[in-house]
Length: 455
Image (tube, rainbow, N blue to C red; front, side, top):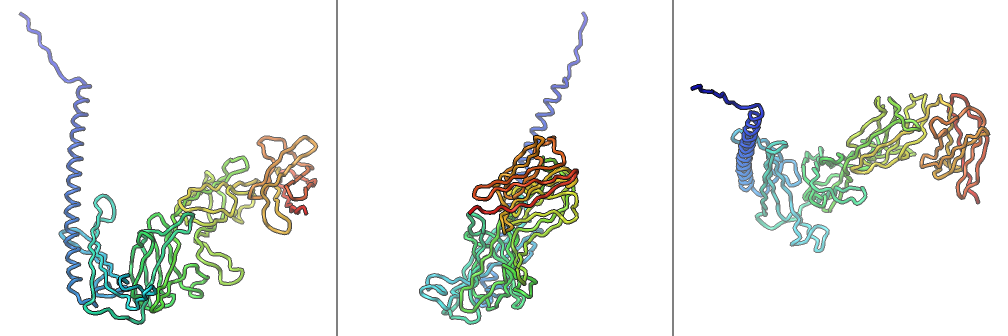
């Protein structure tokens, strides 16, 4: 008898299927172990933070009432405002907030009834955080109220500073959870707070000082705002001046803070073709103040000289919202600014992503540019019909936009020779304008026109 022997094995497809199943099982177990380990570490860090917060609160509870407070704060005391503590190999950040409370139970300062002894009690909040960011970061906090041992008494030389942070954009309201740093170098005062849900913080028991409390406001995705000393300590008249505190009064400081925006500048010809490497100046955004002498020109946060790239673009990110103006740099000699879309000056709004299309004309090309304004003013005329024609049959018309300009030729490839042309401008309520103009070879011919109101 003959015995036939078969050697069986895995095919390539079977091996790949087995490898896929093995990989899937391995990845699943790894993810389960990874997530479980992360939760264990997070719980361990949280328990350590709670223990540390309790320890710091117990230290505060064992202080005399007069010593309960933060070093250099409005509610002054012996507790550091910020500490870095290492516990069981883990680094924690301890932030302590201590504040006087003007409770409504017995009236408030300036209210009805008027409570002149407005330092009713102290509120201490201890926050312990770990990890700067990411999934492993976290924080815990403890709150405690501290009541004076005897009757409250009126104090002299201090007052209440109420700071409101709000957005001045359309539909704006208070900015919640903004970080507010208040400092006064004359008094050695330094305190950091976060605004409440209405965008307010209230500092009770702040020492009297006129225009010396510097306020810095910051928040992710928002512009950073700082107050300035008044002129002449600042070389211009600032909009946001350092806050003042008058003793025995509620002092209010209001600061606008808005979400930032993005802007792309695109330089192109009248047909929309890119023009690279154009030098320009962009000015605007948040108004910081005005110059100290007449005519009190505004000073803005951004005043940049820049250039578009090889694709005719320049991208700006995280700009302050506000009015902006665009102009070509004086070094640009071969091009003329026809206009921008939107027309300059333009308004950049919070959270907006705006493309500013800058239309340029080559000064060395046979072309014509009419600039239409209202008579006896520099106001550019929008909505005027501008017609350019010649005896050879050329005829095109443009309705001016907010730039008040009309550029010819409009159509690519149209016959537009040098010579004599008739320029007509009409607008409802204004006298018609008509004039023969000469257009030179290989040159941009310009014409300024003032429209006279039809009485």
